[in-house]
Length: 383
Image (cartoon, rainbow, N blue to C red):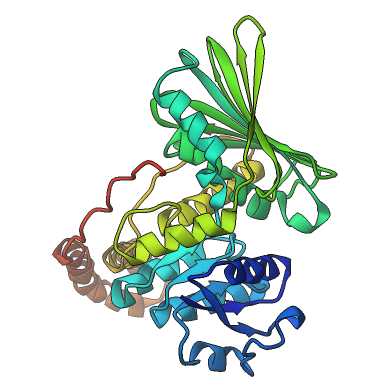
């Protein structure tokens, strides 16, 4: 595939190098471009880049200020894309792609390769086969440097997808940070509750780079994956039994970019593959829920809904209907009390109430007239 890369940061540079290493892919163009790839086409601006002939897929990067708009425009023209995660400070960018996908069939893969790591496959297999006995919990520990961004919206939103791939759909989050409040910058601890009341914990500490650890525990022992945050370095599995005996298995080096490219190819071919748009959306929703938990100082329960034009329409009709009902509740007392204050004209307000009630009922009935879209496909296991 011929790739267009949007953005010129370190992550985009790594992707440019990765695409050049793949025989079946080619770096077709880059905006604003890289000094190391002087022979690659450099469009004058984003519009020229999007209209460039021969582009078959896009790597959407850039600063958060432009990444949201770039992603929306790429999805609107239907180009397959890989998007650096997170796409912004919230899930709005993914919501817009979900709405565009119904019209253009756009394929989007969030750059969340950690769930595809071979070591994670070992942990998943251990959970499925109950090799560690009765499930006790999942814990992820990692560090965050100054350039990694906000601990909650940026670092946690990248980390939580890995934990969610093992835990399942998260039903509630409880966040605590240091310092306390909505924007911790020293440490962040998030408790996750999944199906069947299963528990997981994500712990992020600001400081120098250290290997990340993903630990799955049972009543008969634990299995730990230690890996570099870039996912390209050496990784190892540490198995401990209930007696304290330890066995270490070194894992081969792994290419996260090649894994994400394989996911893009499978999705373009119509096959099911992960991570997909839903996974990226859920990661951002969990980050937003954690922010609310930090602000309110309590557990936040999550209730998921399919993103579609129909659901958006129903939400608008419900909100508008509620506003009409509130208006009626204000208008009726005003119409009755006005004459007592010498404002006889307020009696005419009462004549507007019956039409408003009819309009309210009509809006609520329109909610049920919208055809339901097909339910989302059942989540499959990562391959």
